[in-house]
Image (cartoon, rainbow, N blue to C red; front, side, top):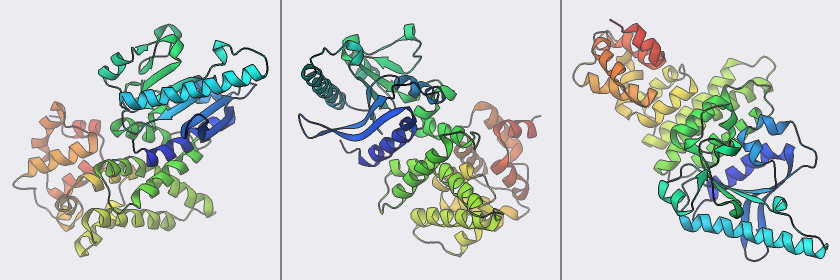
Length: 368
């Protein structure tokens, strides 16, 4: 049950979001054993208007509760371990109520929210977890039988809207990637946006410091990097009255160099030469390309050959498909149908189109 890196981030993340609404404790000890609750939350006596800005997370935080976030889907044993924390805390509250010579009402008992990137049907069936449409909790929130006061949240099943954004940031793969893109797109005056970007950026920095990166680490870095770029860009702009462009570009250049070093061990002359053209791309596009394309593919699309009046030659279709797959997640039938037309263009004309146009723009550009 090694959850420390994600655990620390998730606790800091939830603490940042929930602090304006009430009292938050992270790593709260449970007296019965050496066991810690990831996030213990007690709402403020007077309801805060910020409950609404947090959407579904704010609704969960309307009552005293425990949040247990997982980076990978929990096992049945891990779910039961979380429930044991809930019952230990409830027993503590019951003893306190008895000392005060009063009873503990059902409404005063805390609720447990287990936040998972996904939940298998076997896990849901095993705990008799069901959707609760009667109280409008929506898809992805599965409640265990009533008196167990526990819910499993399958983050990848939550509806994609503003109401679920703050929970989807804790997801994985495309779920997290899309949520971070949405977060970056929020207005700068949004009360949570700036601090959350900083937390995501710091998480990205900490993961990147590891000397041995797993595939999961690389995926996480790819997802978090757009937030890092945006946070760094805004920090530079705020730190200098004129927001000098060269300061921003220098920070981005250092990030690209670090990426290349991690992937390929060193930056030779060929790789050094492609950094400048890569910096012309939006951070979210650049990050995916850096982690998904091979060294040969990066040199193909950004090296000197990308500016020559030649076609891709043998294996050209496969090269274009791979680039489209990295950019858009998949190559559907509509896109695949346009590749033949794309290959008729010289490399120097095709490269900027593939790197900058949206899927819809590519379809329109190569229609007919």
